[in-house]
Amino acid sequence: MAPPVTIRVDLTEDHVPNDKRHCPIADALRLSDADILIPVVDRDYINFSRRSSGMRLRYMTPQNAKAYVDALDKGETPEPIILKLTDKNLLWEKPRREAVNPDRVTRVPGQPIKPLGETKRYRVSIYTA
Image 1 (spheres, rainbow, N blue to C red):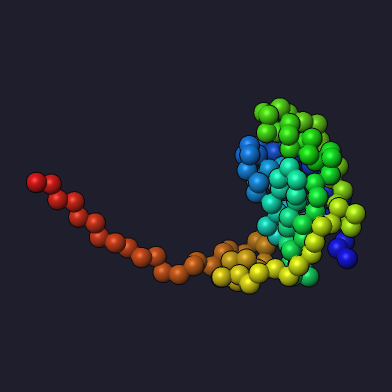
Image 2: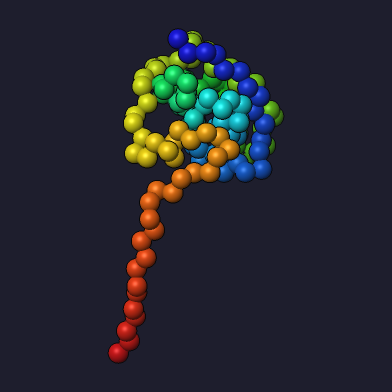
């Protein structure tokens, strides 16, 4: 099945309260392994994709991570935790969807993102009577 994930989660300065994509757990997953893409974390589930396998994974959030998320959402400063995701927590594993613009999603870390296309410019005129 999926390889186990063990990471240390600390509170970060760029933490955004009640944001599933920018919580300290999502940031720690993203920074811990270049193979992990698009982590989304909420109280009940932790989702992310694996670049190497092309699979999207969904885990049940462990109890210590639930308590961490709850404390963050209440505005408290929780103690760092060790997050362990194993096959015991794995709910499902399925192929990732095809990206609309694959160059933006499957880019090599450290390289610039290619633009989505030409920027359209509109001329706006305001008339007052």
